[in-house]
Length: 114
Image (tube, rainbow, N blue to C red; front, side):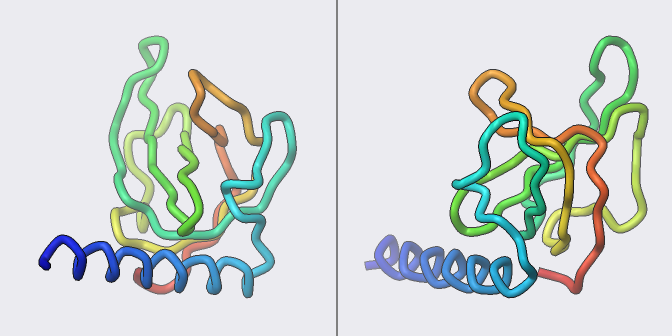
């Protein structure tokens, strides 16, 4: 019973995120392909500092109710406002790294809390 309630809640949140993202003129992440400049919107699930090639890199996972894209800011340890639960719009060139959609150094616009 609890599992069903939790699954229903996740589905409702995903539907709400999809509607919000669409209203902001964003492309659903599930429809994003590699080597295409795209505008996506959603909620940050995780924010992690992961060094790449010996340099700092701030990595955030953006979820829009359809899929996930990694946003990576190279050379950054922290960005004010980039935190789990925060909604944002990001723009940039989507690449596929090890089967994961990634946007390096995206332009972004912070929105209200998740």
